[in-house]
Image 1 (cartoon, rainbow, N blue to C red):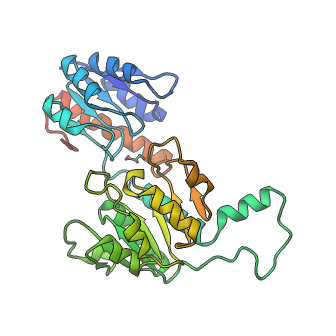
Image 2: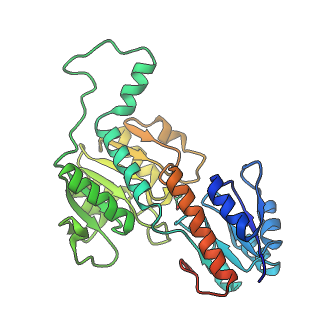
Image 3: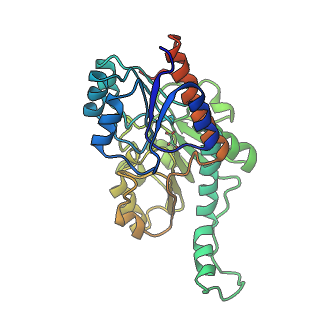
Length: 322
Ligand code: DGY
């Protein structure tokens, strides 16, 4: 294939777009607005490679239209691929790649940011000050809870789960417990204890943080039963995908005070956010910022370029997901 065409659904940081342009005939979404299904179908059908991202719904109609047209590869900009119908891609003989590894540190850093914001009530404090409502220092003002020395429960001890555990253990002296679908021999590198279920992790933890991929098996892995096992002093943090938490059960627990708070960077059906979550008490809510550093977003683009170039050269994809 000489100079293949690539369809890019959203704008990327400039160095990554430049790297694309050096190797491909690039069609950019110049206005960087969410594309309609019809626009996705047209783009997939008319390019050799499609480079979508988490905010696009790449369902079987889009994949099939690509396969019936000229699309021969999907090079996803992002590690999560739950927005792509992988079965349809396999049925159409279209390989899919992702961008693992390069967003581990950024996502782990944001998880720790959220944990600290929650237990130290940083969001509440900033809102109070900006509203001109701060009446001065007093011993009982916005008193939170310590993070140092507490127990962190991780659901999904992959790359990002391990990076969060590392920061929490070595930076904040936290004990770590975790659930993972396969056994982890080294305690996650933090002397962590693997437990059998999400509910056991919830019962043992002051902070429960989700780091599993969104699959049919992990849908609502943090549901009413697991949340009921949590202490009223404990917090939930989700930087994975909205679907892994049962939002209705979470809202009920926040409203009743069954848990101390929740920090969410991802939402079911985002960018729409369930109004009950916005209204719930003791939350830190961020607009899917896990990978949002210049370094990481450039590196994600470079990974797409690397995979697409391998495909064009007829070489195995470095990050083949299906
Ligand atoms: C991913 O890559 O899956 C992230 O959620 C995007 O930040």
